[in-house]
Length: 151
Image (cartoon, rainbow, N blue to C red; front, side, top):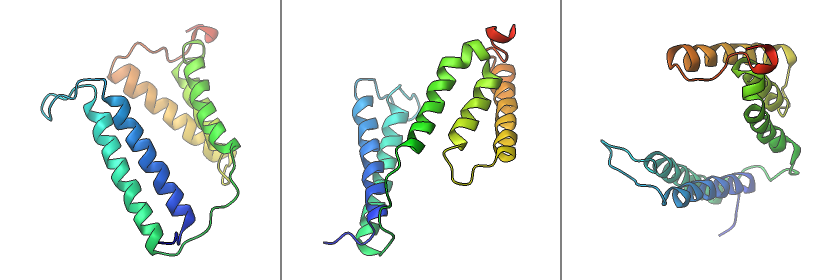
């Protein structure tokens, strides 16, 4: 059987691998039931769904012709991963608002369609929404403005 859409094939393999990894990592925690979910329930279900989607994409790649895999770029995934690391490291010192803004700006920079006004507007909106949802409504003990800003 020939791979007719290499891009879809490798995307499906990646989805399936991440889904299987989620199921394997969740095995060490109690599963619970649908009515009383344990800590393993959500990652296990998410991993199963992701694996099924990955399998469907792989099967589709064997049937439908699609584009080839282009040159791999490692700096874009590094920017997205790095933005999460930056968020985690700067959450306490800068606070939620600026950390979310930086998360959005750095990860959006990985896109070919990156535009400063759009990224700034999205970052500001998500920062405000995160502050309202997590700090005000849910009462999580996360500083909106961090210790570096006198918060």
